[in-house]
Image (cartoon, rainbow, N blue to C red; front, top):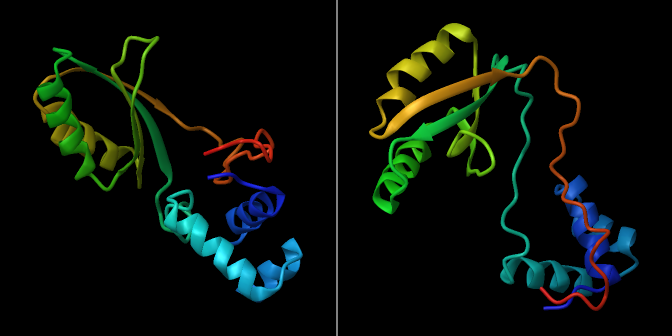
Length: 162
């Protein structure tokens, strides 16, 4: 699939405001509504647009503490990693979980919780009880400097095939 300038503009505007009507989007990218709608549908069907979400205000919901958690595992085996990943998928507090390299942790998690008391229960009652977890190193967000949900698209040219 190749993305042209219009496709990139559609993605740009939808990343900023997915609630735009098709008419508003078509006007913003310089298309009539029907071809614009077709392009959006093609981008969705290709899997490039994975879904549509509403971003909530974490602080207003009382979720005041963000933790970045490094997890070390006892064994680097597929069954151990699969079991860990299946378990953390069940924890709504875990916003992100990545296998990482280049540091002493095997996983890096981002968790959002109301406060330190809740975090302690989450850590001791859930994370450290997962089989294979041998180390947990937590850092806490003091102040968020950048929060983006928009992916950079400037590197994509008309010749780029996806």
